[in-house]
Each structure stands twice: as C-alpha cells, then as structure tokens.
Amino acid sequence: MARDGRVRWGILATGGIAASFTADLVDLPDAEVVAVASRSEQSAKAFAERFGIPRAYGEWRALAEDEDVDVVYVATPHSAHRVAAGMCLEAGRGVLCEKPFTLNVREAEELVALARGRGRFLMEAMWMYCNPLVRRLAEMVRDGVIGDVRTVQADFGLAGHLLPEARNGALPPSHRLRDPAQGGGALLDLGVYPISFAQLLLGEPSDVTGRAVLSDEGVDLQTGALLSWESGAIASVHCSIVGGTATSASVTGSQGRIDIPNGFFFPDHFVLHRDGREPQTFAADPADGPRNSLRHEATEVMRALRAGETESPLVPLDGTLAVMRTLDAIRKRVGVRYPGEDGRRDGDPVATPV
Image (cartoon, rainbow, N blue to C red; front, top):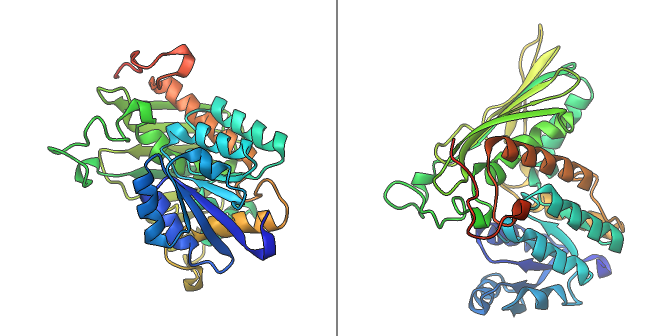
C-alpha cells in the first residue's frame, strides 16, 4: 500500500461531492487517481474523461477488486455506504467513506469490525476534523484557553426550495434529501456537522433530546437537539433543509468564548473572547488552500497509509461510532426510521409526522 511514496486512489460514485474531492485530489503531488466506478458505465467514463482517470468501471465490484488501488473514496448516498465500503474492505482496499458514515450505528459497527478484523484502513470523511483552523480551535479548547466548556451552539441549514433541483418551491419527494430509501432528511445530511463539532470538543454526550418537523415522506425537514454531559456542559444544535442558517458556531467556557461567525466546518477565521481582554481573531493560513478545500482529509489519509496506520487519530473510528450513536438517539426521539430498520420492509410506514 502507498507504493513509491504515492497513494493510488479509486473513486466510487460520480456525484457532486465525488467531483469536488477528485478536483482537490488531482492537485496533490503524491496522489494518483487510477480508477472510478459508477452503476452507470456512461457516467463512469464521463467522470474519467473529465479528470484524466485511466480506468472507468460500470460496477462497484470491479473497482473494489482492482489490485492497483490503495484506497477507495466512497461518495455514494449514505444509504449505500455499508454495502459499498464493505465491498471494498472485503476486497482488501482501504476506505475513506463519506459522512454520515452509515445510516445507523449497527451498520457503522459492522464496517469498523470488518476493517479492524482485516487490518484495513477505514476513515469517515469528516473533513472538518482535518481542517487546520478547526484543529487549532479544538487544541485551544483542550488547553483550557477559555476554561471549562459550558455550552456549544452550532447550526447548519440550507434553503432546499432554492436548490436547482427544487420544483414549485420545494424539493421533490424523490430527491435524496426527502427520500427515506436514501436516508433523507436534515439530520444525517447536515446535522452530522454540528453534532460532530460538539463531540470533537466534548466527546459523547450522556443524554440526548430532540424535536423535529417531519415531511409527508417521514424524513426530518428540520431538527433541533439538546446534548448534555455529566460535566454540566450542554450543546444546542440545529439543522434544516427548509431554511438557510448562518452555519455559525460558538463555544463558551468559564473564562471566555470562541465564535465562528459562519461556515464553522470550514472557517476562514474565528474570534477568541476572554474576560478582561480585547477579542483576538485567528485567520486561516492562505497556504492551507481554498476555504472549501477537501485536500486536508486526503492528505491525512495518505499520511496514515504511508505510516502503516489503519485508523486516523484525527478522525478516530471510536469517535465516528459515538456520533452515530447520537444520531440514532435523536432519530429515535423524533420518530424517523428508514426502510429495513427494526425489521421494517421496504414500503412500510417509516415515521409519523409530529
């Protein structure tokens, strides 16, 4: 793996996030994208032509079994993460799997057990954790710069009716954000960010409560959750697919506060407020690349592979499982279930709107 200092990547799926990641990946001197796969051979070939990728497969298994691939980036809808990532791990490939890691913690535990049992690299693509400025903020919090953490607030919402796919002022029921079969809803797609941010700073909460507004299809249009810890810390998180939010975050401690005014998961700056002192602004280093760069997580994957590591200390699998447990707990409280969960069959009712 990671032969000659270069890491050979396969890309599984050809949607927007796959294109964004690949665009960053091809600019890294020690990365080589050697193959791409889609369920559509035509889509795979078009993607390969766009990025100069030598091999295009019209099925996932062909990519998983490509011995020239060191690690596969899985960018399918999250309802397919368990199958796609599991196929790659079983074939001997390392995996970087998009967030949310899986539909539920049961599937996540299966992937982690598979990777650990076979000694294969596995990481959730929580690019926020690899962002240099977010890492600096987390280090300052751990070092006690603002004292003991008391509260965390974070939000991520988008105006779904303004997306290009919207029809008559709303996303159609077949859209992945509204389709239960694709794990639709605000929580898994967007809420994973504020929850992961809170747990980066505080670990897994001891108690979780939540409320949501559900669609006719039974997915959450917007969700608010309150997480609490035995230390007394509380986090308030919110996500929405029916209204654009500031995507801001704030961490308050016993001796000060850190604010990220917007884009907390890929910030260009944050502001430190400490009692009795002037506010300090910490800006991203221009050398770290564009504000929305995905290359930091790719760099971390390649560092780990070259070091022979099967997990990343920046995005540990135990942390991923902890976030999945929180997501499961919130979904249980707001009444969102997906086809196939809890013995349900496709076509069964998945939720009761509240």
